[in-house]
Amino acid sequence: MSILPESDRPNPYSAYGAHGSVLVLNSGSSSLKYQLVNPVGGEAIASGIVERIGESSSPVKHTFAGNTTQREEQVADHAAALELALGLFGELGPDLAHAGVHAVGHRVVHGGELFSDPVLVDDDVLAKIRDLSPLAPLHNPANATGIEVARRLMGDVPHVAVFDTAFFQSLPAHAHTYALDREVARAHGVRRYGFHGTSHQYVSGKAARVLGRRVQDLNTIVLHLGNGASASAIEGGTPVETSMGLTPLEGLVMGTRTGDIDPAVVFHLVRNAGMSVDDVDDLFNKRSGIKGLSGENDFRELHAMIARGDEDAQLALDVYIHRLKKYVGSYAAVLGRVDVIAFTAGVGENDDVVRALVCEGMTGLGIAIDPERNAGRVSEPRIVSPAWAQTLVMVVPTMEELAIARQCIEVVDGLDPTA
Image 1 (cartoon, helix red, strand yellow):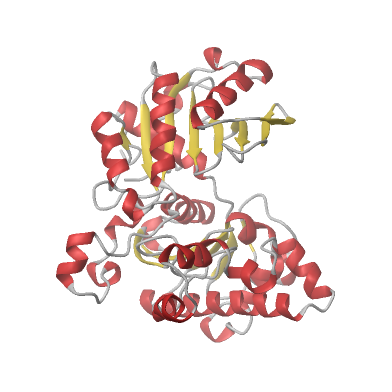
Image 2 (image 1 turned 90 degrees about the vertical axis):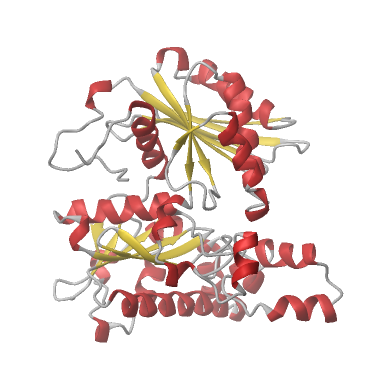
């Protein structure tokens, strides 16, 4: 299902006018992010975040009309966080009662094999999201709690769950199947699910529209590089490979996650380091990646450390780039022809050094970077490859909240943007 209405056809969302909006909620284990989105114009009307929920002090930020308000509050739980956020809309604007909120969209990390599309939330859907918690124990319980609280506080509008894994449900069997005993895999839902699907779908479609091409005619590699990072190979609009697997741990080196690692490292640490399974889980997800290698997972600080001659920081960047190059090369082999490589998310959009290093030495694959085009942060879609390059390298800022908002409209009103 397409989530990208921008094209030469009439905009199916225009019926709502400029005043319709969707409130998009992302409920994490200890945070609540929110954004009020105009699904027609695509702009964020207001946004905010409540962090460190349940701790002694919670930083809170709310942005509206160019003004950002920050304060510290004591927020006991997700119910209190959402009540606080709704209160900030009333206090700082815009007043949700007059914002024409058409739906509430919830980002849910794991949809398993149950959810291949966004879905209107009812009690049964909420129960199934909770039942999928063993596949995403750090995410789905918090997602479900956020939905439960929001339905209680905003019961007068429909709620829609949008799943990170949905876009990759169409992966071919040879791509999503692990070489694990088939009975064990089937019994416990072990397969590659993929994540950041909303971003990968949005960015690949946006790249095609910027180029004036049909997404069906392009083979695209999307590199979603944030604190969490993932890569995908998309053939004619359909994903055929992605780097994250059963969980968001597999694949690229990330801010605090290992990415690909020999599974026997787990056995080694349990048997020889006296670590429990929970210890290893914490190590792999929260104390590894760029932070584990260098002590810092902010790339701005990482570059500053390298400039000061820090060898650990340099190695961390080298490992990060090496893994990215391996994925680009392998996905080029899977696709056979690469028309576009699209960088997106925090690092992908803002770090020209990373973009240049990933593409360095790839002229034999028709991949190169133009230093002038690539310079600086990118806030609008931009081609950063030289004119002669066989593969277009682009920076395409992701807009996951907008994509979620538009999926909500499709679900709530049954609009088909492909019509």
